[in-house]
Image (cartoon, rainbow, N blue to C red; front, side):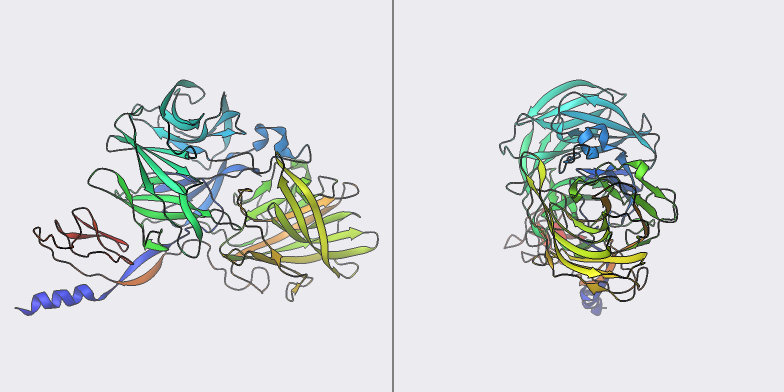
Length: 592
């Protein structure tokens, strides 16, 4: 039976079908992620800055496919009246930055906490164990627990790690989560830019991740006691997968029910789309420290499927606003005036502000840019507009452009307007309210228009084109291509927004009858064609697995014990000086 070894070797070399997820797992602006797992379900919380409601909650059953299920902060106006645009300037780029969300079994509730405006720390809780339930504010903690993360200790208490005055601190919260019992300074980082703390307890050791946006480094602290003494290492300084740019940083750690570990971060330079979440497997070295699973020094574009079952609602598709409440994927630009919008077979938007400045106008509803290239199309009823009203679809950030309907005593026109600009002058303020680049006349008596933006968020693309139609079958581009801004100081990425504001007097309204969002450049009718999922599709890839037999006495150029010995893109030794080359995932095999 001498043919058996050769036959086994042949089988080992044959292509094997492997289920895999792709990065980014959800191609939308979801920065400063915090991850939690309860049983077989994963939850994500992220930053939202000046958008309302704040701190969205997303749910997944496999870490790759996500759905929006709610928000932890129902009204960011609780923080300051500027988040209502009451002063006409607003709180752009302020509001909710890196924060935390955690489930406390003894209270059977979820909690969210974050520092707002470098002043105080605000605590919210869910009404029960379901994070999709209603949330409310329960406490304001004096002082800023900046860029904080939360840890549930074995005593059932929550300990919040944060940065203050250049040092890292730990605050022990009361069981009620409404006050702090003690604060302890635990570490002063050598890199003064380190922030974004995420603490974990694994195998009796305490680990604290931090990130330095300036250098792109992701640091890691370890100690045997929650209060130290801590030892620091550089966890990684790795790039995002091509074609994304910049380093991946400020991530969160989570384990699976089967005991595997994953780290989710963001692409540091993902604009104009924003910072998009990247998921990477984690291994543990013989020294007890976690190790990133990289491919040629970068987070890979694909890894083996995490596993798990459960369906999620897509963020793509057409919404015709037939529900009595807005889907949680929507957020307003600042807190809306609730008396100026309603849902009933469409979203009615009455003018809420008299202004010539779209940035100062209340009740602009938004969705995140989707994918590397995406198409946003709306159907808008305009029969109830008043003279002086302006309504339409905007590509929204600090440098913006829109296509919209202007109503005057002379009738209706559709305008493409760019050069809407904000600058950071001790707070983000408007420096230009727009220039009309192109105009199209529409027939008197027109009551419905269709407006579309096709936006290219790829590296080097960074642009958007604007279209209109009166029949949803033939779309005409208006004006040229808009050059999107890729500078980072305005932290959120571009969003699509639907607006309606008055320049003369309140009283007019429009109705958003349908909003279609999909990946790619789309040319068809609203709701038509095949809608491609925005999620990290779990696809089947073909790879070749090779079994390597090693001798424990072979020293040569083989990898050392616990060293990498294989994986897609790996160019190092594939034999082991000690142990056996053991498959971990398609991108990483290790000598064990």
